[in-house]
Image (cartoon, rainbow, N blue to C red; front, side):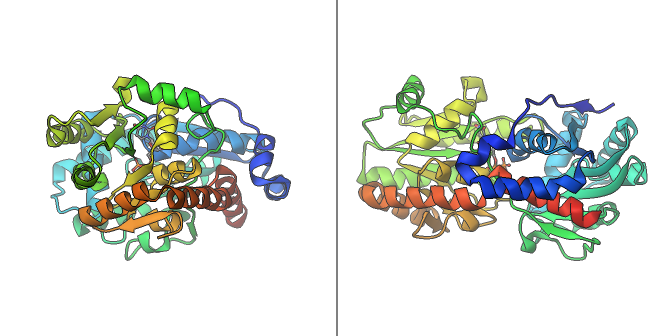
Length: 411
Ligand code: UDP
């Protein structure tokens, strides 16, 4: 059996004060004919990263509207996750080799997990490349409809990885991508849905915390709240460009010597490369003690991320490649303007000059960050607009509605 993730119940009614009664009514109406449908989400990890984050809300909300929804996690070892990290990078276009040994490891673990998958479901949603081979190895058994949910950008993949994985993907009844342009060439699925990720406004990471509580948390890491604070929250990963963030911060520091930088990043169990990049980041920061490099072993959890996002003057997300960037959504929801890389799903959220700024270089990142620090009224206005933008477009209720729509369409 695959590992089932235990979930706390959630009630759609609790979201009425945030999104309004009408939205909730629409969702319930859409769910009515789907009552009793058996749904299982399968992914690689219950901890760390955006996918796990979303499933903790989406699955309980599916239950609340009457679906029999579950979340199961595949089994893997470092050997497998090193390979799937290469798949992740390769499918996003990184130039690296795909050896026969890597193929065989991916196949073996998918075969193993397919054999361990039990039960009968109406909808099986397989997230990302790690377990994508499960449909093939089960020959579709156990699911009436199989959906592959891709959270990454496969628009310009490394052909070695793409050509290898496409035959496995081609078997699915539907694909979900974050953006139309992420669909790699040659993948023709019977149905395609474009669904952006969302955040849960009631989760410990996103619900408003008392300001004093936030201050206490941020101060406990040694930061001085009388001085400006920049934060990036991200896994330690080259695409998130933590080294570039440090460079941009250094340019800002020439103008505002008191500025501080916090880099917060959790270590996901499916991301062994994280430690390597964490070390590089620490080395790049050197002896500058105004740079705080923290991760979950420092006790950085949801409430801490919440506090840093809420109290920062500017949140930076200087990705050079990005699926969607939930951390951007989270920061905007707290009314903090974001300076973000002009890639992936970031421009859907950072509306240039309205909810923050889009940048393509270290210099631009520094310039826009400096601008926001020097124009606090503008920054506050953009932050408020950012929160409204998220309220309308990127909350869990919208996500639930999109999934229900897809299930109805698939029948
Ligand atoms: N995250 C966290 N603690 C950290 C770093 C990240 O809880 O120290 C969370 C973050 O708040 C967000 C998710 O991990 O909810 C990252 O999602 P995103 O889409 O930004 O990036 P991904 O890691 O999926 O590429």
